[in-house]
Structure formats: C-alpha cells, structure tokens
Length: 199
Image (cartoon, one colour):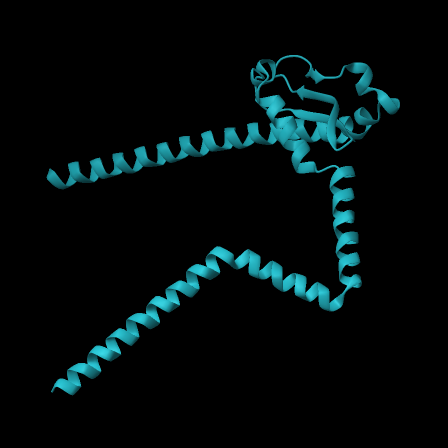
C-alpha cells in the first residue's frame, strides 16, 4: 500500500515538473522568439555568406526606392477625403455627390497636392466647381487634359446615374402605391365576405 502511494506521489511530482518545464520553455520561446529567429537568420547568412547579404541589401534598397518615388493611390485617396470631409463648402453640396479631380506629385517622399477640385451637380442650374487646392489655371494645365479626360464620359455618367436613381425612386413609389391599393382591395373583399356571411 505504501509503495503504491509512493509511486503515485512520484508520478504526480514528475507530471508537475514536466508541466512546469513545458511552461518555462513556452515562456522562454514567447520572450525570445524574435532573437532566436534572428540568430537562426544570422547563422544562415553566415552559411551562405556574402551572396545572401548582398541580395538582402539590394532587395531592401529596391523596396525603399519604390516607396520613396511611387505614388500610393490609397494614401492619396485618404489625404483627399480628409480635405474634402473637413471643408464646409463641400459638405453643403445639395446631393452630397460630386466628381473629384486630384493632381498629386511626390517630392522627396512627400505628397504635394497641386489640384483638388470638386464638380458638384446642382439640381437647379449648372454644375458647380469648387477648388480646395489650385485654381482654374491649374485645371487647364496640359491643354485642359483633366477636363478632356473626364468631362464628356464621366459627367454624362453622373447625369445618367442621377436619372436612373430618380427613375428607381419613382418606380419604388409606384410599387408601394400598388401594394397599398392591393392590400386595401383585399381588406374590402374580406369585409364584404364577413358581412355576407353574417346576414
């Protein structure tokens, strides 16, 4: 009996130590995983020598140059939207829809916005163009290239979108009216059936 209890106690102690050692190893890995991976990388680089180091330098230089000189459209979009959403004149547009024209250049890693203009379609009268950055002269740079590229097709598409939205709204109103009339007709029929059944 005592031997059995002693064996169970020894197994319990070994199990607890095993768990404790496992937790210590896991904690060590979590604290030092980056150092261990880095050390493995250094050993690997030492194994492959100068070729690996030079390849890494070329790759990082390429990534740096790319990030410094290419324009990120997502970043330009965020900058333009921040400007647009903080301008009271833009936020008062009747439809809260418009066409934004942006011209951006990247100088020394920084975005330099040359033009930020919004064409807002007006319900009454001609469309309104609001310049947040730049002016009509900047808009006409390159022989009015921005104007030529976007005015005919894009403005027509915006007008067509408005027309389609108006038509959809009318159709929705007509459908709602029809459904209301149909419900009223069914209610009258039910009332008539009830009145005939009770007489």
